[in-house]
Image (cartoon, rainbow, N blue to C red; front, top):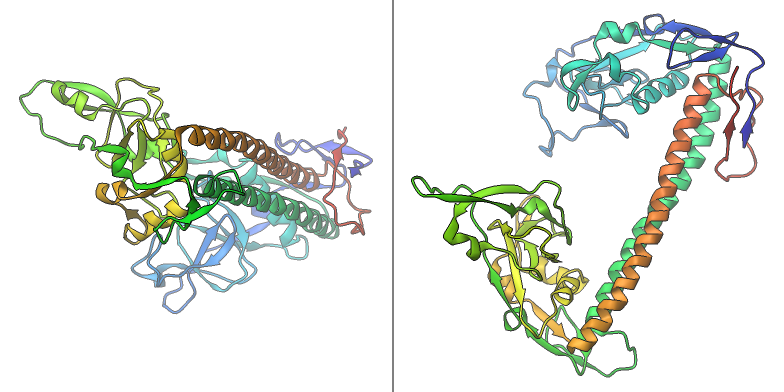
Length: 455
């Protein structure tokens, strides 16, 4: 969809706005909004959180997130008023509240100063565009850009917004509500596709490492309830038959008065969800005599002792990208013998059957789970011949490449749709496109659009 520009433009005098339609005004926010500051003074109100998905009612009974000891000191927010997390210009947000309630006194609550002149939906689009485009950011103040980079009240009041007539604001808001909903639907489709691709990849791994590639081979009961049937010619044995496990170095050991060497070592943070992240490898001091004891070898399968249920027990093969390199005591290093390929073990730990085993044998806490070295080594493992292991691993590698290619296309599509959405909003609210003659189209397809350069 291609949109025309307005017949005539003028310089807004504001860099981020650029040229605006000749009949539009450009005004400071102090002329558009009234900042409210009403302390509740009593309990009993819903507590509201300002999130990137809008203003939400907070579940204070769950104990999650930051809690206050006295919500009577929070400020009131009325339905239809704007609530803004101006304390964080990086991850904060702004929205119109659909609820009556209270929110942090550190946040900013404001309402339309002239409802007869301004459409709340149009102004909200401008405010949210300012967050997405980081337009407020250069005017922020604070000790750190991440977490406490705030927009002071005077800077907020002196910020300029374009202001068409209220009727035009309403038309633009309706246009954006309709068109962004269509783009959002396409984004949601692509995100569902990404999840389906992930599920399919998981299913392919689970089937290949427990059933093999030949659907005609005879099957047998593995003798393990969670594993089920496996090809009749495969062996099934516990991991300790095929590998040893090496413990890691404990952080904070006291070597006072003894000479140490400083070595790189892998922590739990470096071993996540079946891959090794070498972006932030730390160093640790150990005795020189302990280096070989805790040293990783190429072909070791690394696995975290703890994590959430989805990540617990997922193994990855160490390729000795750093050598020598040690590992933390909360990271297991499993060393297969000649009967088991490291890649086969790593692949099996990704299977749903192995995920079930680790879940059933883990210790569960509120958010995390952990598994002992003994339970890891008791994992029942289906073992085909080395030749068949290699054939299945080759098949899984080809499937991984196809999966990553398809996922990359879907991820790129989401990014492009999000960019298109952002560009459409910015163009509409600053008058770079003229949508006064727009009518909701019959088609539900998300729009292709081009923005002609405004003169």
